[in-house]
Length: 253
Image 1: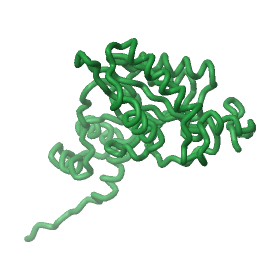
Image 2: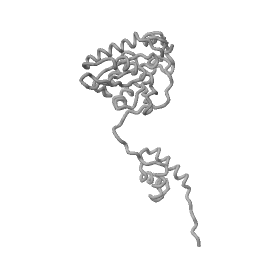
Image 3: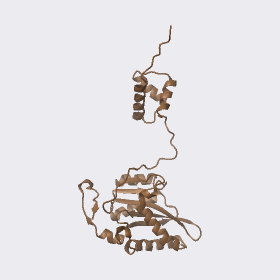
Image 4: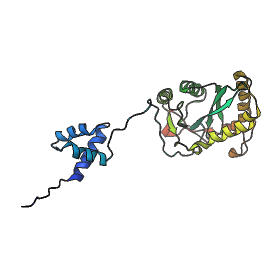
């Protein structure tokens, strides 16, 4: 008398286990076992746990608070102004060693510096207010690109993007070259202004950077846009209303 090996169809069982796990979301292996038992598939806990671990279906522990979620898909080059803005932070210090931070918002097509806001520690709510102020004057963009800092992954930014119906794109972690337009603007700002000026106070920094932003937009030529200033580049653009963006017209040369 010999033992006859009886093998179950483990492949079908694992596929059904994966389907239920994807449908249920954050289900533990015990809850998945209950769901399988409702379909007439009964197994002991050790076998269920082994299959659960083989497919890496364990529930991952959430760490930290909820943050804004945006896309990280590859981006295409903008074909006109106000189609894509880039947002980044620049840090510096006052003569008293107090740290200040600047919010820089750049149009990726015309290279215009749309905002250069200085404060000691601007949070996500401050960033959202500044974006609302720019949108009120200029109109909303189709997309805003930012990094993965806590200011740009806050709930205030999530609400701002949802209320304004703006697509928010996050660069891949550790890849600042994915929004090189604003990095280039920040590099020129640091080289030509921040490294050349000692800021006595916060009001002094605001006045100097206001003048620097005006010079950047209206005086300084840029090789990336054919030696024009960003204001001149924006002035040579005609408005065009593509049918796919009836609520937010794209602008093309």
